[in-house]
Amino acid sequence: MPADRLSTAAPGVTAADVEAAARRLVDVVPVTPLTPNQRLSDRLAAQVFLKREDLQDVRSYKARGATNFIAGLDATARAAGVVCASAGNHAQGVARACAALGVHARIYLPRTTPRQKRERVAAIGGRWVEIVVEGDLYDDAASAALEESARTGATLVHAFDSVGTVAGQGTVVREAVGQLVDQVGRAPDVVVVPVGGGGLLAGTLAWLREEHPECRVVGVEPAGAASMRAALAAGAPVDLPTVDPFVDGAAVSRVGAVPFPIVRDSGCEVVSVPEGAVCIEMLELYQSDGIIAEPAGALASAALPALGVGPGQTVVAVLSGGNNDVTRYAEVVERALVHQGRKHYFLVEFPQEPGALRRFLDEVLGPDDDITLFEYVKHNNRETGPALVGIELGSPDDLPALLERMALAPPQIERVPPDSPLFRFIV
Image 1 (spheres, rainbow, N blue to C red):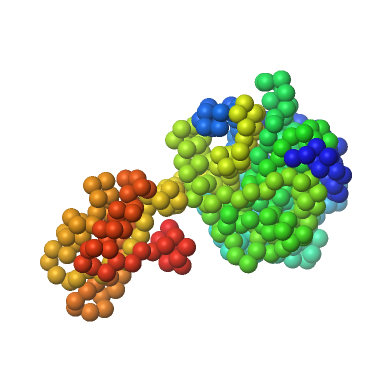
Image 2: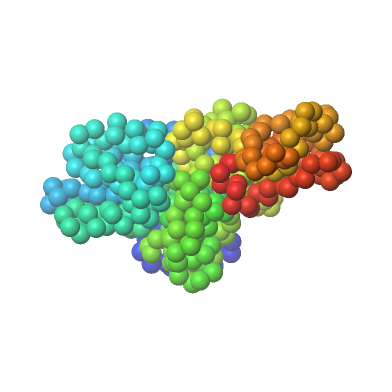
């Protein structure tokens, strides 16, 4: 990113705001480690460091923005209490701040929030927090929280759309750059951060544009919720017609009014990553690095291979959260296999006669192929019975040969493409 673009003044949040937030968070929000990652460094021929915000005591960077905002309220506002909406991580940050400061909170969570996150919010907030489950998406919960604020006078603690929250989120990269200077003697060449509503990216830019304007900054969104890219294309925040809720920590249909002009005026890059690629990176983080990351936490590192990082460059990627429900790993594996081209689904019209399935196994499947799902979906007559068949290949390169054998096989076979509406009932 050109230095003159990054240094352009942007409204709302300044480096001084981020510095003030950092002072406010001292001895309140823990410092998280900046760790080198050998797997990613080898892959990119670069020096890759992960800023481990998953190691916060609430397992997410969101504690920074929430604490900075609530700590800045006067006594009257604290007595009136606060209200917020969240997909889970912001709620934990608010709960932590309220329990520490003795402020009552009413927290709205969408139904898509994993149970693990709901239970953590309740445990962290204790008697200071009341949880309300509202709507299917973050935006539904946000509307309910806004109504609650207007009705009761409680202060709305926005997850990303306030100066105090954005400034608090900016302390993530401020802290990481200081740690990197201590470790390698200089600031990073590239900083990569996840994007939901834009608070972390805006806070990052607010500090870097003044302190290290030469640094390349990249924001990463899930492909199914690319609200910042939509806003940049439209010239203003817009509502996405649909949102894939899988990357729940970043599944926001409209970016914030405070973050947007900071991002727009910075000239930074904003890219999107398919949810399947995020799943692959989650599994790599777990299996290779021993890190449990939630989907949003894996966004930044999942994007690294496609960013054209130069050999020898120093890269900081923010691993934003680790609040992942272990029951979701079956879906993570499934989405990863589909994205890799190793998992495919077919509708097969089996003749209702002895040996039909055996012939399918012998004549269609390859030696390294495996049936992972077999369900008759309808018995419409006595001659045939359609079945939904899931096949996992030994290698993505085996697909053309499989399709060729299917074309020659007696049963009528229809492939179910990944963009089919049927897929949402499978994956």
